[in-house]
Image (cartoon, rainbow, N blue to C red; front, side, top):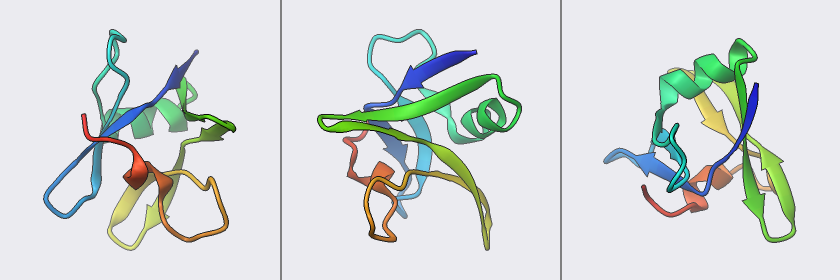
Length: 86
């Protein structure tokens, strides 16, 4: 199992996360559904390396299906939205 750092995210027109990215890594970009499968089946883990620590990326069941998110702070916002586009 690889622990993969994510520094960018792909987003669609509605700003939903569609991919996880880290420039220069062979696995990048990783489509959302593939990353969800990686996490759920224990194949790979993903995290965001912030300057003051790291935040794990997890799978959440929402009203419209599964999605990826982090909980870096006490807000309800998904901090993956803060990453630059890939």
